[in-house]
Length: 309
Image (tube, rainbow, N blue to C red; front, side, top):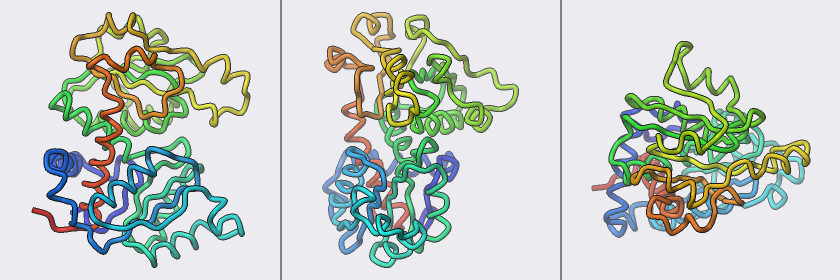
């Protein structure tokens, strides 16, 4: 039963619950008009303490397409946080106005803290470098729509694996399914943190490898998940400049990939995927954007316990 629960990190959903959400999302993809009024009179609170385009608009579009309304803010400067209000008081206040809350915050652990005090279901829309569980649902819906399964896949994760919360969330979740293998592709400085590996893999796990060159492994992948090197997470700009173009996916590299490999990216893109790749039928990242809205529609319905046919 998902009704009334929070979604803070990927471990809040077991495999059966993930399938339940994805199954509903696929129904919405096929017949979105059937769900256009199921949240009439309900309100989503959107608390974005950190800038966001896709995630915020995706949540807002999701609720509007379900027939509901929205209250909230898109930057902390326009909230009472700028006057010194605590996160706990903000959550309590917005919970009085809304039926469900989506929150993004730059600090790791903020979603867990807010979840302890919310009176309505709270969805973590990204907390610092921690987790981004609704991006994971977006990724999963795209994978299911493209590959038809979550099992027996070779998943390549490429780029900034150190700060990439979408990578951390997807890695943990995909490892719950059967016989998946992972290729972690990054410069040494941007390797996935040990604590994430500890959480995602068993101590003696042999279903992942770490490499530096995409060209060496792209022919083995079923899914290539590209990520941006995140300038805002660096303390030293010189390091960012040195690492920002470590990987640029080009048509030449795509020639080495399987015909049915798919390319995902949480966006925004900077320079890590050449625009010439956009017309390749294996490039799924713009379809992924739309799937994100459908995944969030399904999640809102489930957490609010809305009855649907």
